[in-house]
Image 1 (cartoon, rainbow, N blue to C red):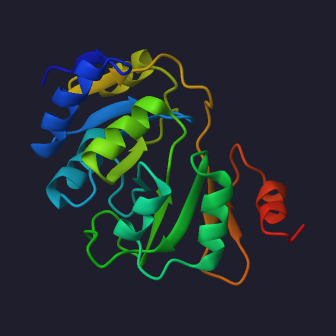
Image 2 (cartoon, rainbow, N blue to C red; image 1 turned 30 degrees about the vertical axis):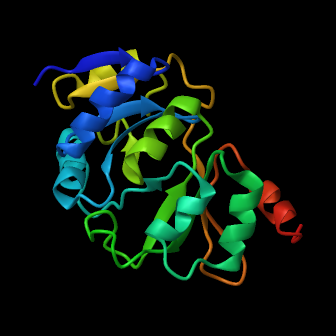
Length: 207
């Protein structure tokens, strides 16, 4: 497979990216944290190819990225009030919320009854997500290798494994998002990233 690299900021790059996704292919693209590689979230065969491309262990769930807060209801049922407060405060941004999974999401996205969801704060990423719909997205690296912050770093790891990389330069964040489980009475920080536990508690009035 030849891996094509197109400029992420060029509107003409959106059509070929959507064509690849709708054919069940994978696209790597910049976010506000690191580069991600993803497939349409409701296409289980396409999501399975993410695991193959990354050599990712099958038991690891894949987060879902959406273009807007309003899309949360497409991938989550019975959204906890806690999640809605944090989404209103930090989305778009480097925060992944673990919420109940929609019954319509394939099990290969997450075998658990939950799913991690995020709205990235990056114009190219949101343009793609708004056009494509929810995508299952994880960092665009080989499993166990560093998360890439540039298209060149993605190419070094996934060249020949995916059909397209959208090149948006170096990502501003450089580290993966903070992950918060929203199913309990209080938030549980599963991974601290750009947002600290203090940031989360303060937003909820719990500091």
